[in-house]
Length: 365
Image (cartoon, rainbow, N blue to C red):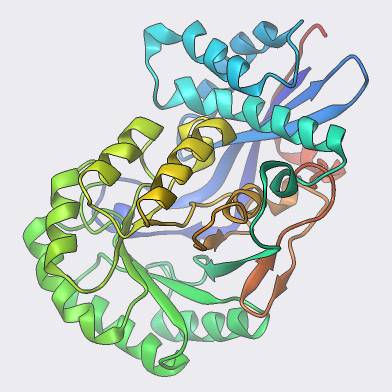
């Protein structure tokens, strides 16, 4: 068993409303914990967790402490192992680092299980489709000029992307002007989402949301604080544009509260942030039951498998930020990302990844 911490640099720093409001600094890299689980039959599973801006070393430290608890377990017992690891750290709760560290092992065990069956993770779970609608977030950050966003969006659509997400949450007039310019440039048929990254209070979200109605947006994302369930519900009742949120929540329980309150049209769980594939499947199945669209956040290499297994088709978010760690690349085709057919997640750690390795730990088998 092996755990390693990597710090993967972005091509250039990016900013969203969390930066313009002074809550965070520009993002220039992503910390990633890679867990490699090898069983007695020499079959290997690979999984990962990640953190942006802060928390990577904490994830790695907690993963190292949990890893010995897997020794001697039946690797097929993914559900029981997940609960064992959760209870092992019960004193620090069931959110944040406590579950995000578990995610790396849970994903690795599912990867290994699918490899054992000779199937992709999507086929192992039970897929509904072989490709998933995909939108590009990387082109629309607040740190980019409108002309740059339009040019990058046009290139993205030309290479096979299905939609574009635009960051908002700056000065309201500038936000509306930028959305108008992008909509005019890309045309009415392109799926266009906006993401406020929790920049607005309830009144401001309603006021700006009404001004954005004319642009036929696929959704408005994180219009208010991510934990403000009532605020999302009230905004959903006030606007015609669908409301999306959920990526910043770090437990399936918190995501369920959004569903219980009828607060979202689009739920955006991050399998890594809520503890892996095991809890993701629980919350995504509940969302499907309630006819809520599921559009998982980030980690395209993982979420394309999970989104393919949802009866109600959603979206996956395109990010290439983790690409340097892996040899393989995802394929875009006709507005969709193709589900890999290779066994497991279809990922192998790139030789070059060691350039970004900060720490590593080998544990007894």
